[in-house]
Length: 268
Image 1 (cartoon, rainbow, N blue to C red):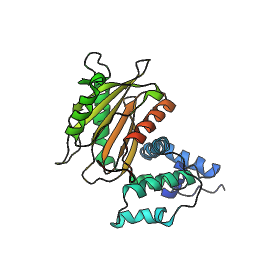
Image 2: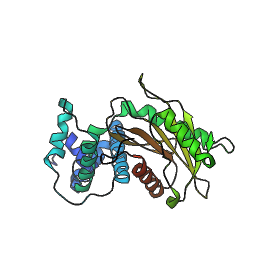
Image 3: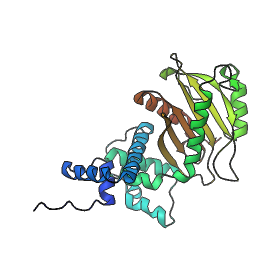
């Protein structure tokens, strides 16, 4: 009699996302997911989040994971112990570099209830305004000084449009939009629009930090648009576009690098 496969566990699912299962067990997990479409959709989200992290964070040197960044330590968050943005970002880099535990860690870091509204608003605004010609933006890039001052004052965070010329994109301009997360402290959002020589457009949707100022990052695909989202104790940002995968990742990473506040930078 052929033995029945062992039950699929959460550890199996996380290991599958991280590519750590032996081929035979991976095949069993794939078969199980085919029979459980809800979990398959969840696993697909984990995999896309891994892709987002790979796009946003540069590779880390091969090195042992410090005790403070190991999954067991991160799990303490559920017991009321919190880690700051620098520790969370470093943990994500090291987990991805080591190839272990990334799926598990992403579940700890993901905040769909708080980010879904921002991502949806960023995608909706992108889809609406990229179709416009004369009214794509409120303030054109030709009036850059006013654009930067206006959006920075209204969002209450310094907003310097990222330089995407090496990626072939020029700033079109920007506009002010309502914020969309559910908080009395919520404020407006700034949208920056970029365009390349082929008239492909990418938008950057920025708000002040969420009230809890926790770090998070997520990848979503909605209405055939890719959205890279992240937040920290300074801002939230969603990059939206429909470029080829490699190009979209390169643009998102460049924007992330230029807009993300770092612990060693002076807060303005």
